[in-house]
Image 1 (tube, one colour):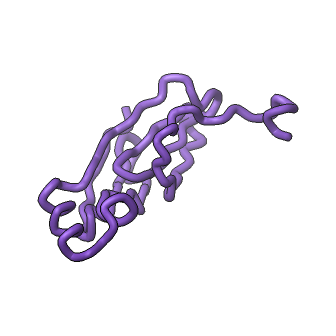
Image 2 (cartoon, rainbow, N blue to C red):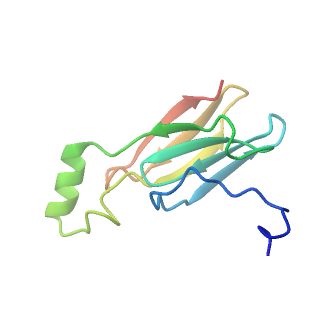
Image 3 (cartoon, helix red, strand yellow):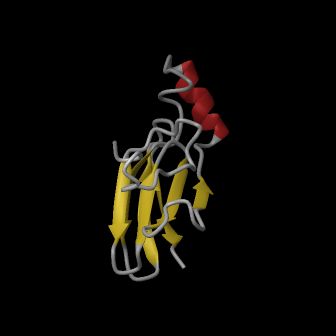
Length: 111
């Protein structure tokens, strides 16, 4: 119904089934950060498909192999699922991911 009424703009950047989990809204700058499987997206709130920025942040290959050896599913568990997106200051966000059962965190510049 929303598509038929032209009252929404779907995000077209995810044809890979990236398992979106975490959102961070930055209304002041008109941006939306989305945490997904192995990716972080930075979207423009006016048009979600305009100037999409994407960071590819997979788990280390050796961590993925350890995860699979532990009997976990390679597609649904052994990846870097982004779980934390938090504003740090005006230019950076703090992000954390599962890292294939070896959590990792860092800062990304939003400029």
